[in-house]
Amino acid sequence: MSNEISAWVESPLQLLGALEHAALSRAAGNDAAITIVPRGGDAQLEHTASHLADRALALPAVRARIALDVRMIPAARFAADTAWVIGDAFSGQVQARLDRAEPSTITIVDDGAITRLLARQLVHDAPLVRPRAPRLLGALRRELASRTTRRLRALANDGRLSVTTYLPDDDEAVAQLRQIGATVITHHFDVTRLLGERAVSVPRGARIVLGTAHVADGLTDAGAELQRIATLARSGAVAYLPHRREPAWFVTAVGRLPETTVVTASLPIELALAGSERALEIITAASTAAETLPIVLRGTGSTVSPEPRVREVAS
Image (cartoon, rainbow, N blue to C red; front, side, top):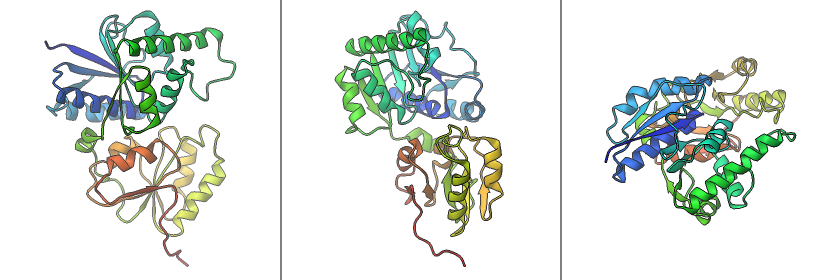
């Protein structure tokens, strides 16, 4: 019987994960249409949703509709005894909704490598609190995170929790999730490649350097990061793709470096590069992109590494 499932996503990667889940669900014979609801307030997420809305609907293998973004998770769509898809189990909005309503089933789609933290917290029955959450997190908020852990573990124990992830089957996180009873399904970004922009905005011959949120998060000194990029550019042209949370002043400073072109980050990097018909050299620090891009670009001859291939430095 046909019905509808709602997905709540709070980042561009979660949106891609929801589309991948929709395709896998369709391929498995589930004829339920999925409506993806993006959380408003994130410029890149809003742009990605707008960019993909018609394209995703036109793919018969996906059968997903992307709704208008809203600021708050819609209670009517995420009601008790209905099937939910969510992208972030650490989200305060998701946790508050789970505290008020128990879904019939819940599927979590990837929000990057934090899926590993989710698995660890669940297997150890620990509160679902983000790693950089304030140490003085309020007692009520921490209690909500604990109740979320208990709710998800109970759903898993009943066979009603599933996770759709890019993590390989032999990843420790996959084993931990299965240990508590969750169903884990691996995707390979097949839909993302169909919808990808094929790196058309990246100048040919340029190394791609990916930005990170480390400067915004205070984990990396801005001066040191600029020096790193400048050093890379001395041995050849650089195309810099900023992280969506990098401050504008830093991106402007990068654009002023010699031999460096800033490519506007209006779409997630996976979507911007997917479908490329040429080999790309991508330099990225340890990040989710370091894991996702080798899957997205598989078969293209592209390289993804923290260090560039050796080139002769221009004199």
